[in-house]
Amino acid sequence: MSMQASQATTPPVRNPHLESWVAEMAKLTRPDRIHWCDGSEEERERFTREAVEQGILIPLDQEKRPGCYLHRSNPNDVARVEHLTFICTRTKEEAGPNNNWMEPKEAYGKLGKLFDGCMKGRTMYVIPYAMGPVGSPMAKIGVELTDSVYVVLNMRIMTRMGTDALRMLGDSNDFNRGLHSTLDLDPEKRFICHFPEDNTIWSTGSGYGGNVLLGKKCLALRIGSYLGRTEGWLAEHMLILGVEDPQGKTTYVAAAFPSACGKTNFAMLIPPAQFAGWKIWTVGDDISWMRVGPDGRLWAINPEAGYFGVAPGTSSKSNPNAMRCVERNTLFTNVAMTPDGDVWWEGMDGEVPAELIDWQGRPWKRGSTEKAAHPNSRFTAPMSNNPVLSPRANDPQGVPISAIIFGGRRSTTVPLVLESFNWTHGVYLGATMGSETTAAAIGQVGVVRRDPMAMLPFCGYDMGRYFQHWLDMQHKIPNPPKIFQVNWFRQDKNGKFVWPGFGDNMRVLKWIVDRAEGRADAKETALGWVPADGQIDTKGLDATPEQVAAAMAIDHDEWKREFELQQELYDKHAATMPRALVLQRELLMSRL
Ligand code: GTP
Ligand code: SPV
Ligand code: MN
Image (tube, rainbow, N blue to C red):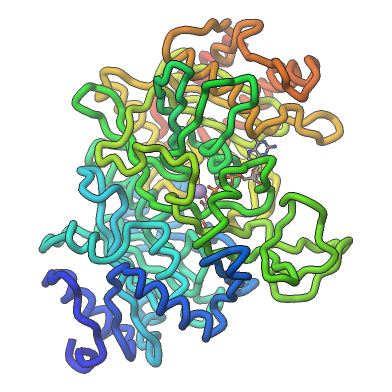
């Protein structure tokens, strides 16, 4: 490590492959200091203190929110940047029409120039981390090199970070190599580049969430999906939850909803009062890695250790468990601050405060037309804060999945719940899913786009091949989960949600679990199986029978239009779209 050696802490576990790569990256970026993170409490305290001194973190009232801090990102840097995200494979075909592609040599050259000397005067933090429970055969190791202490503190919550991860790696060369620099946060220098063939990620010019916490979307989903295809498993944008029935039997479900479409809420759901004895346990709220177990079932782990959750809309009414998660040891990004040092966002409990400091640090008054918190403001909370954390969340084997759910945000057309006729039809339902865009990514909000399996921004290779991989998985899973589709977001003519959602989604989930266990009735429609009359328990539901009917309605004219909308997906992926999915679409048309 030549000139840096005297200013570097020593790695707590030695690994020559890792050390030579760190030295090489240090030669490129030229930091003043290199710090090997051990993940200790002492280290967290020190970095938190330094981040406060530098104005990167703002302490909140430590009595109201012990261990909690606020971070304000650059206003030009508040969400994922899909147009600046690249898959850098040898051929463009490998990345597919769903991804931006850059030739690997060009990408290394372009970002190499940006990285050249960029850490002068700064510290390079070496963050070893594990995605997945310690000791899990499904876990993967990554190492992120970054010049952002905010990234270090977030990665410490979101992953198993530090010496434990290094011990898991041992002297192996099999780890994801992540390099990140905020540079000067110039959007012109912002690139998120993935090199799946090298198990490498380079990220420049951003300091926000999915762009820079490289274990999350970059490794666990984009690189993960690529590895999953070659190694025969699935990396998905899915929550994982356990449904415990009154007899104490727990059934596990995984559900893919696009960004900001309800995964965290569903994963922490509290059933309505009359569901006595039913309980939901959170395994994960964003990502699921699934493999076939020795029993022929699909087994899932949550590779993460924390929640990077959407703040707006979170309240003790919509998601009481999330409110408990953020009571302590939580980092808030781009929320508003109250005059007494607490946090606030649109949709939180109680009266809107008369005065606030908005997410950009400006004074804000009640009645202002501008939002006080950014629509994509978030909390980073350790999963150990979750009162309904599944006792199996740290199980190295994961949990067996009985049902897979796909769900989009659709104000029209898509009914409350459907069960697929079979696996291939289920893959078709997931593949053709549409959803209205949200603030989780930069761009227009509220426009319907195809978001296959909620993976459009996260699939690290050609989407047609990804569909084929899903179809192929059927032959590898002797006891496959059943596949369902849901939509919580249908609206009436006045733009009001017809289905109350949140805790009441239990009513739909119960039917799904009962179907998976073979104990509920369904009726056939052109789209799939739907609950037979009376199968969705509406006792105590705050909705009229007309609203429930509107949520479940299937309108053939709307579906003929939907059928046309799907054409875009089929055209875009014509080169690799599996025949089986073309056939599924033709079958739907003939049923309609
Ligand atoms: P990412 O972290 O971006 O992947 O998002 P997520 O899928 O975990 O979304 P989250 O649960 O944070 O929900 C996003 C927004 O949807 C929040 O503002 C919620 O209040 C809202 N939401 C969640 N569930 C429901 C529901 O059942 N009905 C309605 N109407 N809104 C919901
Ligand atoms: C998402 O956008 O799906 C997220 C947030 O979960 S981020 O980590 O920023 O991608
Ligand atoms: Mn997500």
